Amino acid sequence: MSINTLLTRGILVSLLEAAETDETGTAKSKIFTLATAPSSNGSVKFQVHATDPDDEPVTITALVVDLESRLDPDGAWAVEQTGLDFSALEVTTIGLQQGGQYRLNVTSITVDNPVDIKAVLG
Image (cartoon, one colour):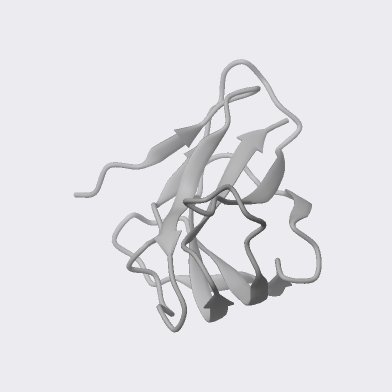
């Protein structure tokens, strides 16, 4: 049994941590679910957070992920949304359903410093 990260309204949570160039797959991703109370519209805002140790801008050449989901905790993962390109747009909002489990699967990443993807439930 895995522990899910719970997305709640108004609280920014890290879902992908310290991802570096060529680290594809789901190893850096947390499994997350949406809080059922207080009620939300299921709108989840995802945003890239990157910090250079010297406070210089971080170059994100490629950061593409698939959003995967499953309803059964022991079931297979399915692609919910493919090709979310955070190198082109560092913030994106997606509508998700309560009751499922979600994770990010990095398909391409080229960065000059580690990056996180954080999210908040609307």
